[in-house]
Image (cartoon, rainbow, N blue to C red; front, side, top):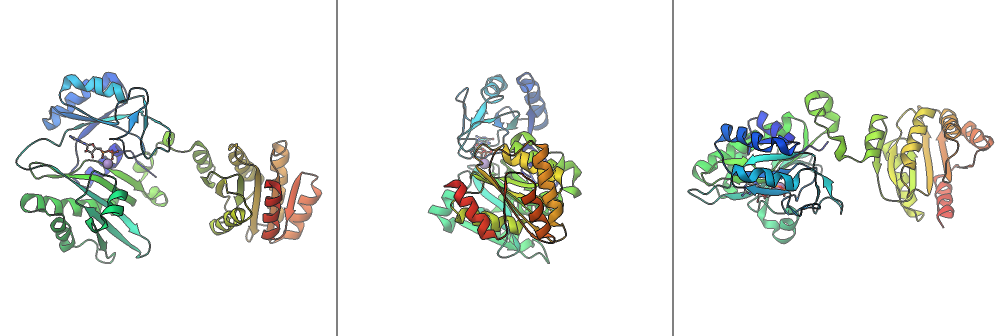
Length: 403
Ligand code: GDP
Ligand code: MN
């Protein structure tokens, strides 16, 4: 589950990670009064207004309606309202929004932390994630913060450092010091960074995150180290342990079909192909997607109906798949292990009848327990359904439909 910057920062703060302080508003009328509250708390009179959407690149992004960027400085309370107006309620398009502007429902008004002082502020990149090859968490960091890390990785990979954490002992003090050292810090900033890294890692583990990307972490002109941005992804499978985080989910940021599928307990990921698939088990779903690809089609989705493929579930799955106008055929591929194929077949027939038909060709392959009975049920149902026994047969049928 992805979080907004303000939500990510609130989690970081609760674990003692130093952050750029802020307030969040969803109405222009609240801008000035909330900014004043922030001033009471922090003493700041310079602000930075930041669009809250689930996408990075906001600083360079542009609001369609106003031409404003998604992160804008407001140097003085008299500037705040105007800057907020340029962002809030508009549609922000960034390098990460796939060509469409995302509606900005909330903006953050944060303290400007790039104030002048004894040294230059400097932007650092830091992320924490699971390295699946190593089976360990890794802290990735670089002096080249503030910019797109993919560009840094491509042009100057030597400037990206990685620190692996042994899960048996956790992050060690020497590792935090090594990170601060490699970032070229000394004195107060060095100490601040070791504290920052330790708190950040504790936070990553404590909230069951699957990814943290803090870009930039700022070393301020008075040598404090704070998180200026926060991209936090939580592990969905651990959300049951964190009711308060589960409530942070912003469904308006997600694909509506995926939200609906999730509510129905279906594992669904929308893709951009032309063949809808309904499968049980993630492995078989992947194999089915491969075979669709090989037969000249492209999967329109990943859909794992799970262990119970009764009429209600199958019907829901059809509804979700058919929301996508690109779908030219649907391939159902179910292996009856615990679930019996004839029950699934009955589910398909019932759903088909309930829905008054399916507007695209349907190919059904049921294998496993009671597969024979299932095939008979489908063949005798009188419905316009093509049944297949082998996966190759199913693929050939997909091919003939598409060509
Ligand atoms: P992103 O563009 O979506 O990654 O949003 P960020 O939160 O990273 O902000 C984008 C950029 O805005 C940062 O890289 C900074 O250069 C700038 N920025 C963010 N906060 C401040 C601030 O307090 N003061 C100033 N002067 N610039 C800021
Ligand atoms: Mn950023």
